[in-house]
Length: 303
Length: 304
Figure 1 (cartoon, one colour):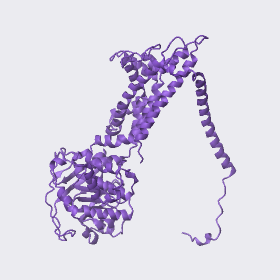
Figure 2: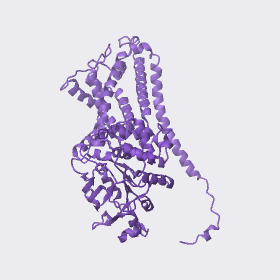
Figure 3: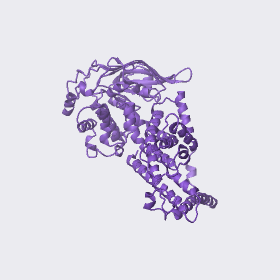
Figure 4: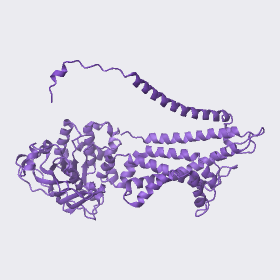
């Protein structure tokens, strides 16, 4: 090691300001990012504005409580609204227990070296990417007709949507469970808790925020799906509310699609109806998300 | 100190309160208690062995990590496992309560006898084992719950009978933490300092009334003052429990332990490192007059 003494005498050079080219690059990068963000928000904003300006006049309590009608003035969305709510209920009731249980099995119990477990894992990733119409055909073949023969009813529609979004819940659930530190599990097992007690009392409560996010994402996707419901047999013109799991039904996306596809003339203008329907769909979605976010925050724990 | 005597009488096991004892037969019986309070008998008392290791070997993915481990853990003593990093001390201590079962790649061979019964026999339930043999980890790992719920978790899942408030208070008193937290039992456990969190983990372990406490480098993440508090706690606890501690800190081993096992690591033919026990004896002998030159080199600081 050389002596330090000699180099200490000269004063160190003061640290200068960033060069102008560096500042220009930084600024350019930030502007680029802001432009992209602005573009995305602008597009969404324009879309929302367009829909709102068409539909907000038509959005009223009458609209929500009337049934569909040939008369555009009297038409309402009640049947579709209640249909959608029923479908979401069935969907959630299906995906939450099945999705969480599958995630627990894959993360906590499955031995990754066994071929069948690896097969399940690979397939779940694939299933998340399958087009939704394929699920519609699956539902038609197995739920509406075929082995279960439920008919074109709420239960079949809800389960079809559930199957569609189940992979999202499973994947999100697995990520949430994996994020729980192993030290928590070790501490619990070292006290003499069984694996199930550890999962139920330590791992799951800690994984709730992640699972809730997965459920939010899933239901948000399911609420807007039209194609599988058409295949499963959601009716287009329905003038009654579903009375149970075995009712025929319609759903908001289908009703909106129906209104959009009708030619408008001077007597009957369906466009505002469609726009109002879209607004209402978004409101329902926001409401569902709010509930899920509230649930997530209640269980949020700080590490 | 009279509380401890009362505690000891209260702790006489009631089989119903302890739940099912399917396979393990434990004699909490009569240990020779020190005649004078606080003074350890200087003469070698032939103590009952809580654990007997016979040629224990642990392998990960068919590669042996530690082998030829054979020594006894005596009751109401603190036994320290010391040695350089990577020599298998943590692996061995995890064999005592079957925590290595949680690692699929690990394979345990040889015998681990607990009060004469082989812990790895097929009819022995690992969950039962862990009820009687508790563990404190290197990094304090309180649950993300309140202090009260942390301590109450063990008794709740084990279905212990009794007033939960009393059980929690007793455990915290035992761990010398009660006075510091009694006013904030319902606050989050993460609001405590590192030393307090570790004592919380000890209290959590005590709440399920184990027979043995295993400590895997409990003070390595703590400052010297907290370390001192926990060492004092260990000396108190050894009256009622048997303690096995893994430590990197030789002075700590010299301060608190009655017996010490010195581990070292050997290079095999295929460049694979395997740990083994070099020497096991009274702590005083290991540190003042070790039999093996490797031990001497380690404890005198000639070798890291």
